[in-house]
Length: 67
Image 1 (cartoon, helix red, strand yellow):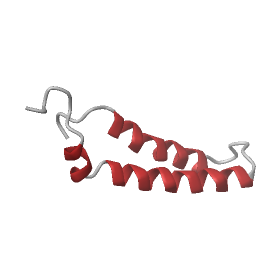
Image 2: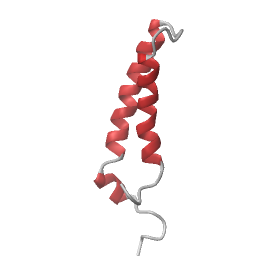
Image 3: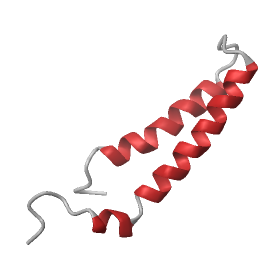
């Protein structure tokens, strides 16, 4: 997506980081923490999908694009 700012990339990278923690073999994290991170990862991914929709991006124009 040319011209998009960096925050969408961060909102997509966070769930990927959580997925890496969940899939890491013998990461040293207890099971309850992996479950908690999984729930948080799903919630962050849902928010990333919602805020990166075209309608939301168009409702918040960049500086200098107001006319």
